[in-house]
Amino acid sequence: MNISFSGYTGRVELNKIPDRCPICHHGIEPRFMNVAYASVEPAIGRAELLFRCPRQWCQRLFLALYVDKYGYGGYDLIDCVPKTLQTRAFTDWIKKVSPVFCEIYDQASQAEQMQLLQVCGPGYRKSLESLQGLRLRTQPGRGRQHKRNVVGRLHRKICD
Ligand SMILES: [Zn+2]
Image 1 (cartoon, rainbow, N blue to C red):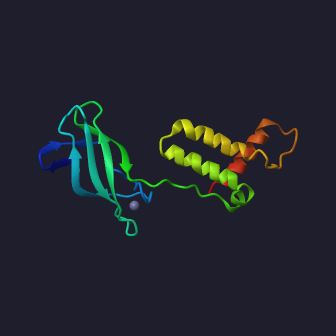
Image 2 (tube, rainbow, N blue to C red):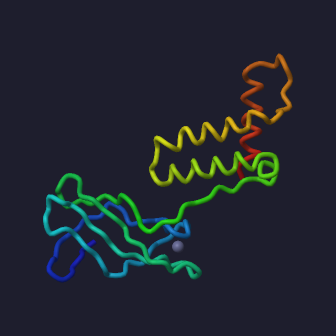
Image 3 (cartoon, rainbow, N blue to C red):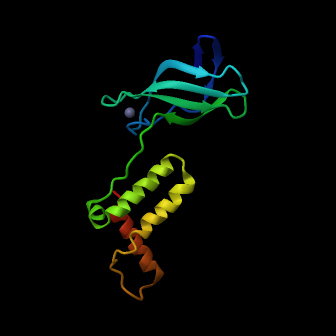
């Protein structure tokens, strides 16, 4: 993609155009709004492009952020802003049985979406720990595979 704007004309090779709207989270082919910035100083290696979501009910503008890690003019997409955090859809069963699990799991998921990877892992673990009080219908003496099957069924019951 060639980008030209006042004070700077240069060739910016983008490795990828965003294929998902960071606001409505639908898969899209975004419209480039002919607004871009690329650092004049090659050592900085940063570019920002303004896109718009084509979905009728969204139509939001967002910036795609790129970096040229190696200084060769090849820019990698690293993020899009602004973005909204997605919430998980839980089944009615788990919402009724353990609203605490839903709340903790959602917070862990949002931490993961914000790249807070040291926080989301313990958050997911805490969400599972909140389920320890639930009485699962397991049959004693059926072994480890049976417990895995119970956890698998539980996972399907929790997540849509
Ligand atoms: Zn959108």
